[in-house]
Length: 221
Image (cartoon, rainbow, N blue to C red):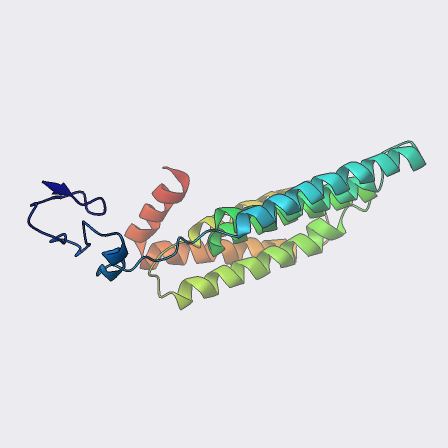
């Protein structure tokens, strides 16, 4: 009995070709006549580029720390380089490498950009502008974008459920901070919180079962 290496089936000695794929068993030259074309193996070219960018980012970070310590005897401006490179890796390189969905990227943007604005306020001793204006309007924009994407897909899936919950949670935290510190401007954060919560409630009202399934899928409930 002959053996076809391509299909893994046994063939009678009198047969010249595999009955399943048509491959010639006796002559390698005739293998090109197989009914199955030999497609080239596709390779992901992003991986080596991302590795090079990661190494260059690490080198730039080490050089910035070295120059900062040598010139100022402290870590001042190099901390901005560290935060910028960290955001670049979290929000650009890693999503490309892991092929994140739009909903995952929107969730990461909401969380890390909020943390970045709070870092800027604390590090530069300018507390107030980020929590009262920058963060609320940024989250409001993300919330509107998530709502538009959900409507555009016709409620086929609920990938935007996770960023909506993240936005509602962050706006709630910001609202609590503003109320605790008795800030004069609360309305942008309040509008963002109410808008994101309204979107979540509407999703439950119109697609309750899918909303529950999405919660179980995204949060393991």
